[in-house]
Structures are given as structure tokens and as C-alpha cells.
Image (cartoon, rainbow, N blue to C red; front, side, top):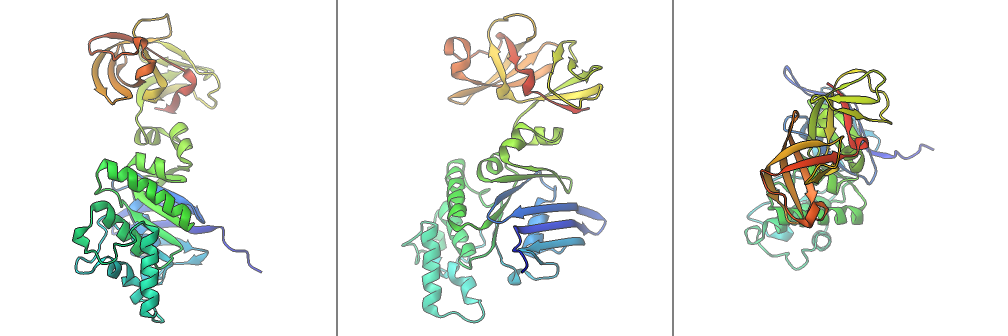
Length: 361
């Protein structure tokens, strides 16, 4: 007896070319059943091309795409156990809400009875908390409600995989946050695999079980959101996911000491595999503590040039002597005297050397 596949989606050495341009280069990817995976990266990195190959809207130039253990090369979209929510929803304006949701069911073969189509459409609308909206016209719905209609239409056919192509990009920040929570709740309730394409790092980190960071047609790192943020695989990931300060440095012989470009020596015990030579140090803004007065050696001294007040926190740009500009995120309660620091003030910066990431220059 053949064991059931544990992955819903697999890419095996997948390459996608458009003429002389290689959009996706030698991708190997395994998405477990029931996972919520985000494909994250800048424009042109290949994430949407990967999504379209899962959906059947594009075919790989080389390699194999599998869904639930079955090869999908050459299989058209309507024969795949997949549905897709597009960025602009693609709803039919001349249909009411129920007709939009029921459209895919009406195309099913063998043909379904009208009563079953209506019952399933209404059930899908209940899942996305739109019960009672069946006869509303699309233009009468808010942006968030239209988003949920598109979701109901996508899940009504009970797909194995739901593909989300930047579905929240058109929403305002408050509504986007609410929809992120609703999508997570819906994914847990349905238990099906969600694949989200986004360039919004916050969206990817907050919604998904696994984040797949892509750049230049390749997967750079695939891991849980916390690992992506706390242990980036390279400088690109450190820069792209979250904010980071970059410091030019040299790894000295023995690999346990960094010499910053201002001459300061920084001991980094526990950092293994560091080869002597030029390096770049990456340090998250929230890993830096800002103090008003110097408490001794081993600190960076600078001048506050800009401040952005964010309510419970504040972001500071600080010109550090000999190193350039630093970004520091400070909890207001952690700053001496529980007050905001003013532009023009001299400050000292301290941080735990264990929080730095060191990459070859």
C-alpha cells in the first residue's frame, strides 16, 4: 500500500524561462499539508511566477511541479485541486454576492443541483462571516467585504490548496490587519494549504507558518518566521526582512573579535565559522539600547538627527562618530527619565554582541 504524500506542493529542480530571461532558477520546494506558507521577496524575484506554476497559469521550462503527490506539468488550471484569490479580486460586477460565489460550482461536471449550489454558496459565505449578504451587489460592498466574497468563491469548491496573490494590497492598514487575522482563522478552520505571495515582510511574518524568502529567481531561506527574523541566512535576508543597521568591520585572526571601521574592537564569543577578513555586521534597531549619558567604554557615541514618534515606541536616526547613521527603535519606558530624546542631543548606544549577525563582505 502506497503511503499518502506528506507534502501538498513540491517543486523539483524547477526552472522557468521567458525567452532569454530566467525568472525562476532551480527551485526545490516542499510545502507540507495544511501549512500556511508565504513567498516573500522584492518585485521580480520569481514569487508570482512560482504561484502561477502551482495554479497552472504557467508551465515550468524544466523540472516538475507536484500537488498532493501528482505531477501537474501540462495539467490546465481547471483540472487542478487549486483555487486562487487575485489581488484585485476579479469579481463579476453584474452578479450579486451569491452568484459570484456560486459561479465555479455551476461549471462543475457532473452538473450539481441548483439547491446544492445555493446551499454550498451560502455555507461558504457563512465561513467568511457574510451570512445575510447573498443578494447584495458587489458595488454595495466595502473593500474588506469584497475580499471576503473572493475568498468564499475560492473555497466553495473545497480545493486542496488556496493561492493568494497579494490579496490585501488594496486595503488600508487597519482593514489589512483585520483581514490578516481573518485569513489565519479561516486557514485553521478549513485545514487546507494556503500559499501567500507578498512583498510585505510584516504580512508574511505575522500570517504564515513558514516564510520562503526569494531573490533573483532563487530561494534564499525557508524557515519559520521567527528564525527568518532572528537568524537570517545572509545579508539580503537581514536587510529585506525587517530593518537593520549595517556596519563595516574586519574579522580578526581567531574569529572571536570584530574590528569596526571606527577602530572599536567588539568581542563576539560563540560566533562560529567566522573567517578572518572584511565583513558586514547587521544589527536590528530594537537590539540597541539608547542612553543619554555615556556609562563607560565599549559604547558608540553619536548625535540624534531625526526622531519619529510612534506612540509606545520612537525611532531615532543617530549619527554615530566614525560609523555613520544608525536606526534605533526605543521603547519609551526604556529611555532614561521615560521621556523622548530630542534631535541634537548626544547619546550613547549599547548592545549585546550576541545579537549581531556577521556576514562576509
